[in-house]
Image (cartoon, rainbow, N blue to C red; front, side, top):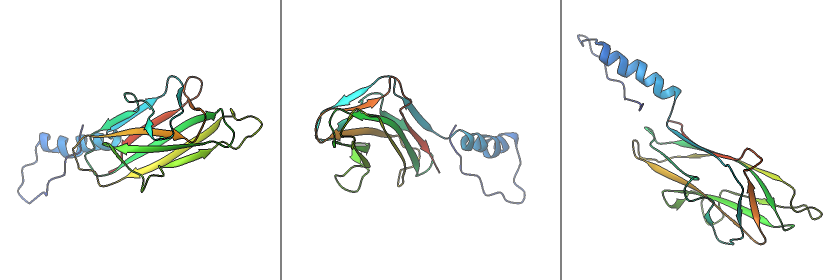
Length: 168
């Protein structure tokens, strides 16, 4: 249920159940349950790409239609890598364009463990994306790359998720 801008009430306006429901009940429901999209990974994903690629073109392409101009994106991923000192870098596309200020992505993990490179490493980010057009659908895609070897997002045995939710 979308947010409706409340009316400017004037002396003499007729108070109807329809207007009260729209401005009070419906808007409270919109605040309680803002537009959002969540995906919990059900399996593992791997990449050997050294350029940014989609993690999953279908399931990790989350679309929302916010009534406002801001969304929050939360990522919670568990990673492993088969190569010591390798770097796994992540980015998010907003309707096909990177939200990061340059080609560096939204964050990276350096797999430091030289004796056991497959040791799991958490990657968590909470981001705010502003400047959206109200009541217009927007799709956010998770991308990643590695500088060598094979990077893995663990979804089969760990809780790895991506959430997009309206903030305003």
